[in-house]
Length: 367
Image (cartoon, rainbow, N blue to C red; front, side):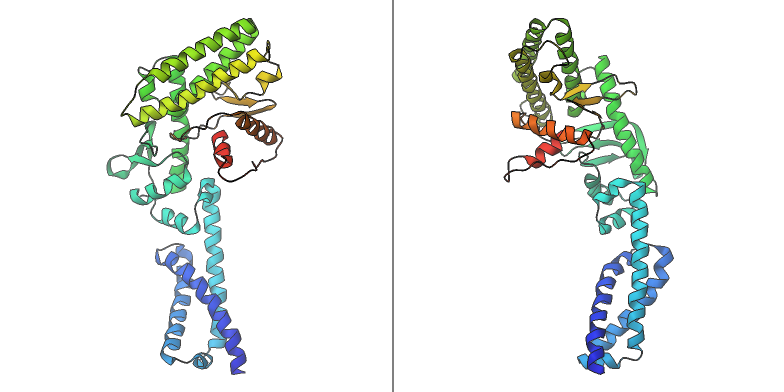
């Protein structure tokens, strides 16, 4: 009977030990006050049992520990209760702020337990917001006044975000402030009220403004004069590209990155004009124009619509930082076309091909 129990008991002790190792540092930080007493009782019993085993030095002595046959299942059951309570708590937090799904349990518990600690917040923020590398705190770390990309682009918020104990609430405020600030930047730059916009407006909004302007100009040309108007547009875009390429920002890394992003966009716009001319396109309803990725500003809700063929989406205003842009190739065009049509129909998509060909970057760039 003793050897039979040893086999079962040690297997159960191993399960208890694995759960204890996972839960102990979490409860040691003060998480889940309602379950603290329950875990403390199991913790004391587990430590006592392990201490007895350590002193005995012999495996068979495990079976002789008083009451061990009843204690082990009780410890396992109590740890299960603690683990379920922890899972429910984390799920509740993730439901209130879905970006928490990007964090593992340990990281999430750390940020929840230290919601006002700037160092902890900075270390996890880039996992929650793809383009935000860090944020700038106000006096006493009680508010956040700006976001910053990995390339040191600083975007000042229109309104400071207050940092409170309820981290999911102020992270939602940060998300709202991010979208509001970018929307405001676009409105100001389109109205022409910004002096030196290339230096003070974020790269993302500069590119978005040009995408909206090109879409509007191309559709105006197609509606008004057909090939002649498109040819004039191609010349204007090529002229803008030449002026941009000739500008010198040596030693100014951030401005150089902005310039590179815009240059790649304008090269694509020239290519689109050439496609329209080659197909003798004379209407906005023709396929050669409809298949392009198009941006429409001045929506009724103040947003931006992004369209491609039969698909149309609302621009999400997620800050992207200054990530290097992809060169727009015919294959990129096909990937975008396939993915957008799939999404419009309620499906997903997955580029397929050899490693290192840009599948992930293409999908991220479209997103």
